[in-house]
Amino acid sequence: MSTSPVTVLRDVRPWGGARSDLHVADGVITAVVPHDPAGAPAAGTDPAHVVDGHGLLALPGLVNAHAHVDKSWWGKPWVSYGGEPGTQGRIAHERAHRDELGIPGVDVTLAVLRESVRTGTTAVRTHVDVDLGVGLRGIEVVREAVAALGGAVHAEIVAFPQDGVLRRPGVLDLLDEAAAAGAEHIGGLDPASIDRDPVGQLDGLFAIAERHGVGIDVHLHDGGELGAFQIELMIDRTLRTGLQGKVNVAHGFAVGQLAAARQADLVSAMGEAGITMTTVAPIGAAPLPLHALRTAGVAVGLGTDGIRDLWSPYGTGDLLALTTQLARLSGFRYDADLTTAARIASSDAARFVGRAAHDLVAGAPADVVLVDAENVPDAVVRAPRRALVVAAGRVVARDGEVLV
Image: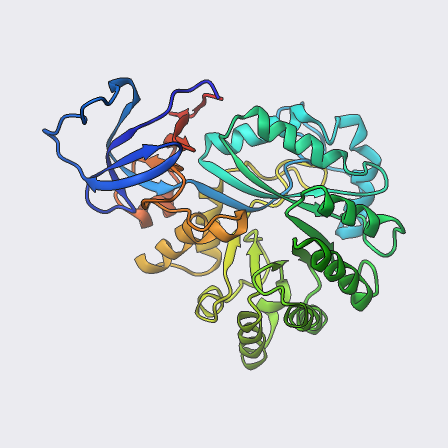
């Protein structure tokens, strides 16, 4: 990263509160102190490393808890949507055309990551395709792209079997290899409707997770009782293997579709098992019961899913704009609810990227986003342009321009 380190971020309003100065060392916030307009920098502080926030609202760096940065064609000429709808149709279309777009490739991955940085994302959990066609090459590509940004984005990788697990002999071995090689999580995909063997797929995934101590993150599109049944299978295996806190259900549309009593029982059981959820705030899906999930101890993360890829031409990588969508789909209008949406997209998502803390507090990574907004609800409703993005204690974007 070519930008210089920040030692003091002066005159910002953390979470819309009182004007404060954030002191930074080695990429970590060391203190949050009241701002003194007449105060001088501490002795020995290089003025070049003191950044004036001009009283702007400060949020923690945004956390994209469900991304696919290896799939995007961002930065390339427009690619028209084609192929058949549905999960299987999209898989087939992607397999037929990804090579001609250079997917996975360092250049396209860098392009979408830089766009994410521009709009304030500083940490990502990204699913990376692992299959018989690309092997583990996609993971190597993503790691190279992240390294090229020099710390502007912190990333955790999910080795993701987009083409199925058991129905493609050899994929379980690839997932095992990826876990052994350092992938933080392994993924799954609709154990019932894709592999048509939910017990077999989940048994295979949990065996790998136990062996290597990695997390599990399962894409679950199956709705209603079929989806709920598979979550119950995950709950059972999580408790039996002691993997509480390491299992995530992505999408989990079924949770939003269940009758109230059934939903309450399932959510409670998920909380007891330490299972988390990630959502991409999809238009048209039944909203997840966010308050009930949080009350039950089920952490929820927000992610973009794919961004302008062979699955869909939509997506910009702007997680704050997606927070607006999450709030609207959830029916949030009160200030407290709108602030909850912002926390889902930032501080509450620390666990999805392997961090103990991700907030504007001492001891947390110095990841900060400044916006010109009156308060947090205003920032969520308008998603104003990011005036400044700081990652690991360095300015990485300013006024819409990426500096890395």
